Image (cartoon, rainbow, N blue to C red):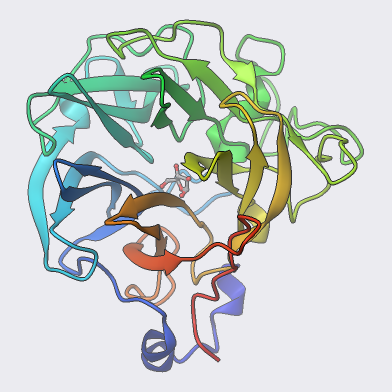
Length: 344
Ligand code: FUB
């Protein structure tokens, strides 16, 4: 939701009408990636902080420095903040902007996947490892080879393979990698984007190596098609991919979900393989208060939940967000019913 449309919001009323309340209120948190490990819910969010970096369309004011892990016994139970799990000062290759992370477990070890800008101002994706789901995590000395852009989400398929989904346009720099190398020329968030009548930029997917520390293959385009089988166009701002990739599997189908960024929707597309192609299927979440929308989808005790964020606690400050959770439901055809974040 754009900042200029919040001027007339009565935030006490909005918080009363919200379908869910912040999971924690003692810090600002965003971009929640939720998993169940050994029967407990672990959430890997961004840790939002005040910054003196001015607002711009590249998201420079999202100047986060560390990650905290939040855990809960149940979606409506008390949440525990396990403190700093990884700080940018402890990541050799990263200089700033610890954006949306994800985590996964393999053979008793826990892997935190995170984007940050390197010392050339280029977003890369790193991995940090721990024996505990709550850290502390020890970062690898270098970012994943061949990684770029933001918002990693790691999905374990039934065969035991792990795939990373990632990418984000504008400040997430995906458009600067169209030719396979980073293009530093061109000002602002729109430089190097395709024209509105060209196919939209695709999010990326790559299978991970067995140790989860590198890509096992070149990242591929994850294509999102419309109902006629044509790729979504860049000018289709209500449906095209912007950032916040997530993958889940439900009753025989793969669901790729994502944010449309400047139109503020969480949407999804359905497919038959972790690589796609995917066909656009609808909206999961209408716009929340705050510019960004970002989510994960996680099954807990046989029910499905959307973890998301909004800026109602900070009264609309875009870079001070709070993570929330709400149940989602599917119809008989596997379509997800759209959530309205605030009741009328
Ligand atoms: O939190 C920083 C950025 O804002 C994330 O990486 C994006 O997905 C958006 O939520």
